[in-house]
Structures are given as structure tokens and as C-alpha cells.
Image (cartoon, rainbow, N blue to C red; front, side, top):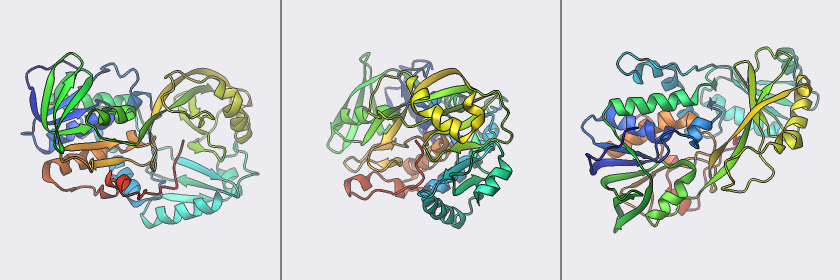
Amino acid sequence: MQDSDTCPSVDVLVIGGGVMGASLATWLRLCDPSVSVALVERDTTWTSASSALSAASIRQQFTTAVNIEISRQSLALLRTAADWLSVEGDRPDLGFYEGGYLILAGAEGAPVLRQAHAIQQAHAADVALFSPAQLHARFPWLHVRDLQLGSLGLSGEGWFDGYRLLSALTAKARHLGVHMVRGEVVSMMRDGRSVRDVRLADGRGWSAGVVVNAAGPWARGVASMAGLEVPVAANRRTVFVLDCPTPLPSCPLIVDTSGFWLRPDGPYFIGGVVPTDDAADLPLEPDLAQFEDSFWPALAHRIPAFEAVKVVRAWAGYYEINTFDHNGLVGLHPESDNFFLMNGFSGHGIQQAPAVGRALAERILTGAYRSLDLAALSPSRVQHGAPLTELAIIG
């Protein structure tokens, strides 16, 4: 990013240059080249950005209509990214691979999986249920004796290069004329229900007609500068890179009954498990003890080939957990006329960013959602005590 001091006042100021903020900034200019947009990011190397540290996967196996439709539209945008994210002939390859999600269930989880499948079928998701015998026939390396059911995405699910998506969105935003501002927001001024002035740590001030909180795990702190509350916490997740000596043909992204997830990543595998200590704001350092304490025993049980495994490396990133209901908060904050949120996606933000960025851009520019109705994700549901229940929460 290049610092910009040439535009102290803009139509839209986006705080947070991760994949959500970069998507919104890009779509604002794609939808209306006349709108002035500034994108503020303090960490231009994205060292601690959740977007760069994500497992970067996409699924349709949700249980709410809005999440399924977001995935459907984001999928289409990922498949065509080389077109709409091209810059002067440079067509980004996101390395998207449709390997599918395989969500496993025992006796307790099977009814929930059947309920989820019925919802997904009603929304035309290409998902199939498999019995233990069918699972064994398709994935002979999988231990199935304690399973009752598996749900597999046959198409429209897989993984991609999240860092490339972030880089491509940032390059496109810059190419479209978004003001790329390197700096850390430290304060905001309120004028009644409106946020007008945003101050950076180096003393620079920006004013905007619309301010958008796209600060990911740091959304709560950014909102508090405007005297507003957002129920978002930064919860650490450790990702392990594993070397398994035995090939696992056609391995999808697996979500086990124990809670671990695993997927192929080039010649290796990556995976993790929900930590026992899931306190917020822990240091962004991998918890290596998780592997032997909880991940490896469950992994070796489900896939015996992993009894012989080498940990190549590990890293940690933050989930931006919406502590209210684990779904995204998108739209105007109910106590403001111009402070928008795109926060709290609870682990599925990077897969939802392309479609959410476009939809919110349309909402800001026209006053209404056009390509995708995100009213179900309105932050007002927190104020009203009306959570959006999503049964398929992973991690």
C-alpha cells in the first residue's frame, strides 16, 4: 500500500484492509466509479491478518438460507475471479480446487446432519448423505465403525489460496482508484448519530459520509472508538501442517465428530481443532501442545494412516467470533446513521467476502440490497435479542 494524503474527505472510509474491506472497496468502485473510497490498514504486510492466515475454504453446507446463498454467489465470483479481478492483463489464479467438504456424524449428530441436508436440498446445494458402508467404499482409508452418517459436497465446495485473493482484491482496489491509506485508527468523533471524523495514530484526520468497520478480530475496539458496541472477539486458532506418508486418494476437507478439521494442501495436509482454552485475545502464537493433547489422537482414530505423521510447521490466526450467534453482522449499526459493519463471520469470512462485499457496496450506494439480500445479517438482531441460528458452525 502507498500512503495517501491527498484526500482528507471521502464518500466512504473503510477501516480494515483484509479480505472483507478490500472486497467492499473494490466493489464500491466497480459499481460506481464516481464514488470516492479510502481503505485504511495498519498492517500492510498482513502479518496478523486473518485473511492471510485462513485455511481459505468454501462450502455450501450451511443451514440458513442467507449463508447458503452467500456461498453460492461467492463461489461464482471465485470461479470468475480471473475476469473481474484482472488488472491490465494480469489475471489472478486463486488455485481454487473443488475437493468438497465431508462432515461426519455419530449417533448424536446424525439427526442434525439429516436436518441440515434437508435444508441444503431445499436450496439446491449439491450435497449427498452417505452411510458408513458408502463412506468406506468411497474413502477406504477412513475409520467408519463409530459413524452413522456423512455429508459430502459433490460440487461447489473446496479450497483456494486466500493470500492470493487478498492480494488480488487489494491490487484491483488500487487500480480502480481507491485511496490506500497506511495507518492505525485511534479515535473517531460523533456528531449525533453520525461518525464524521476518523483520526489516525500519526495525527492525520479523515472525514467521510459513510464509515465502515471491516476490522475483523479488532472490530470491537474500532466500534468502541465511536462509542458503539459490537459483539466480536478475537479467538486464536492453531493450524498444523502435516506430512502423512500414506496417500489418501480423493481426500476432501473433513470435519470430524470430535471437532477437528483436515484438508489436503499441496503435498501436505493442514488441520486443527477447537482448543480447550478458547479465551479471547490470546497471543497470536501457535499452541503446539494441542497436537498431541487433542488433535493427533482424534486424527489417528479417524484416519489410521496418520498414526505415522510429521508436523512440518504450525501457525496461528484469529477467528473473529460473533459471540451473539456466530454469524456475520452486516449493515448499519442500529445506533448510527452512517457507521456500517461487516464483522463477526466466525471463521467463514474469507469464503463470504466476495459476495458480501458486492452486496454491501450496493446497499451503501443505492440504499438497498440488489444482488444478495443480507437483511438477515442486520446488526439490529443483536439489539432485538433475535439470534440467527446456524446449525453448521465449524471451529
